[in-house]
Image (cartoon, rainbow over all chains, first blue to last red; front, side, top):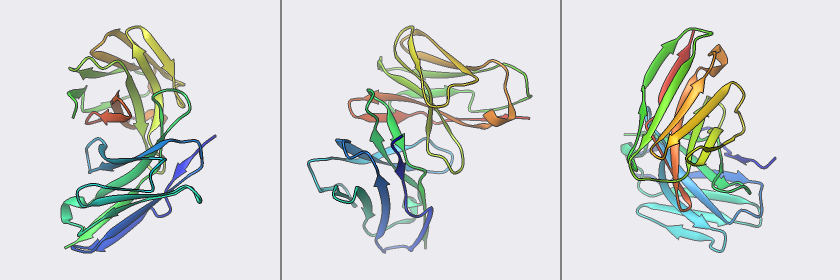
Length: 112
Length: 110
């Protein structure tokens, strides 16, 4: 079946540095992707999404890049803050309605 | 949080006992989902519902059943809990292209 995965399970960055979290996907027909943030003990929260007809989308301190050629997307967090410490994972829709594949997640730790 | 609550938030039970988890939403969303989250795995879909009395199986439905008798409530039942069902369970609703998640229920089966 299709899969969504992440390259690195953990990432540590210094406060103020930029963070980059990567995700590989295998369904070239997916027409959008979503990034979620999950803080310890909480449910996942939507961060940003990107449609397949875009290669970049910016939010507040976050940027998602999509490379359809290599089926890769990344989440960039600018000026990482301690509150950014969480697990981040990507998701893509399945072919059957309103269902998603979720990646396993990357744990981001921000070092003060 | 899209008005999603889950109860209980924590539960410890013994193997072989029945367990029911409740998901409640206040915004009349049509689609509701139950996932489990385990180390080394992404969120895995157990069951989902696309309306009152309309449910379908997800990727890991064995050992679970669901019911949706009202739009606002989606119940997940473990008829006879096993240790492999120790997990964190999340309920979700979908709004357009997004899914919004509840706070989760941590279930431990001894």
